[in-house]
Image 1 (tube, rainbow, N blue to C red):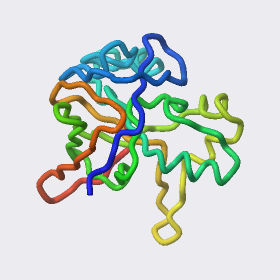
Image 2: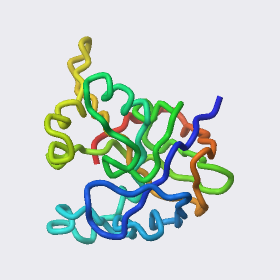
Image 3: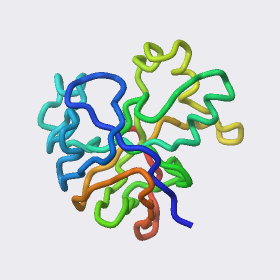
Image 4: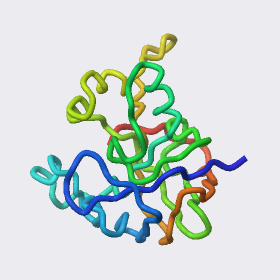
Length: 181
């Protein structure tokens, strides 16, 4: 069963949270039209200072709505766009995807997953103590999991709206696990 887009968000200026919209347009090779993070080269405020010509592997930030459910059980009120994501989904194991997975969003848009969002301390400015909830320690392997979504680049342009389906297309084997970017 395919997943679903539950919200879409963008903001033209740097701010931690992004307001929700009825639709966003994804532009191939650039990102979300009208979003401050759109561009061929990196648009992350801190990283632009030391690697301004690096390719932008963070054009679109996707986050699973199930994280908000988990956080609510711990007393945190977080809603779509609150943590700066562009596309909020339900029913897709974003964190379990391999690098290079393609996500078909609605009828047109396709994004390629590039890595895990690296959470920053600004998350605690949004809600005190929330940063600590963005990590999980695997009790078996001892590895950290970063829980605040995945980053992607736009491979095919298109409009994305809440209620659109999300279909996952896995890359050829062997799969490479997601790393922080």
